[in-house]
Image 1 (cartoon, rainbow, N blue to C red):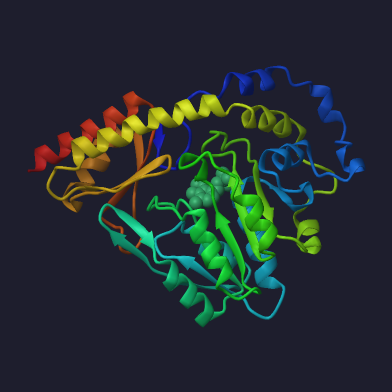
Image 2 (cartoon, rainbow, N blue to C red):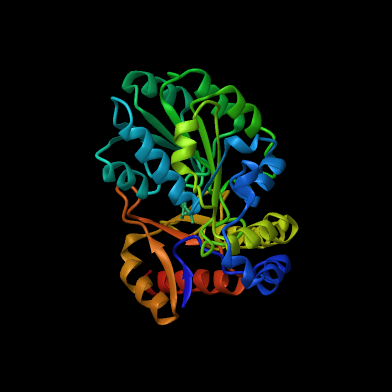
Length: 346
Ligand SMILES: Cc1ncc(COP(=O)(O)O)c(C=O)c1O
């Protein structure tokens, strides 16, 4: 089966990752890590602290970005008097599920379709956050499934103009695809105590099965950090593989370039067809509006070929497909199938 429906990685892990898996000493699993004796969480948080220039105490380590969301949303919505979170319209459905798991309520702020992309209206986000005064504000950059992102300046402008007791979580699961720049993170988390920036090894580093996420938090959150932390340490096998992945940027950057070939193909081949619109993508997936009339035959044709893509069901995006950018031959097969089914219906 070709899975192009959940933004996974249809390429090879880096040689360093493969080597880390092969050379892992099983004996290491017989003991807890001793790094806690040095007052650190993990070899990963130490490495991430060096890479991002953020003190290790402010680095959070989780079981994927999902776990970061759960920890932060559950903790902040359950502690204190306000249980509401503001999330982007057309975003990962899971945000509101996590909020409802702990009795929280969510409201959405709009994303606006502008040309071939969706955009945040930063002033509107600021105004709504002040008006609603939520316990949390969720920003996703790039956003899934619309693929649009916020710049560091825009994140800073939002932080500067909203209440200091609204905790902001910026979900940057796909951020490595837009920029190699990470220099903005340390100044932001140093300046704003109410900020969390969340990253993962699941997307750019192609290791969703490893379940490693990390993040950064503003100063003064000892209780939350202790809530997230694992006193007995982290999975030592995952630690070894994660370090190798973080040391393999060149490999994963080459893969990201290959994904760009797919973006261009969809744009060129499907963009001009009536009823289609190929949105700009800055992540490992692409959003494409298509004529709903071909939904059923397309589902069947892709199933016959053993391909899975995401037929969106979200309100307002029912006529869209979200396709993970895979290997060239996969992209070619999906694109050809869409065209074939479309031409047969026309
Ligand atoms: C927007 C977004 N954030 C976070 C995640 C979490 O991924 P993981 O838990 O594998 O890090 C996903 C997964 O698809 C996602 O789409």
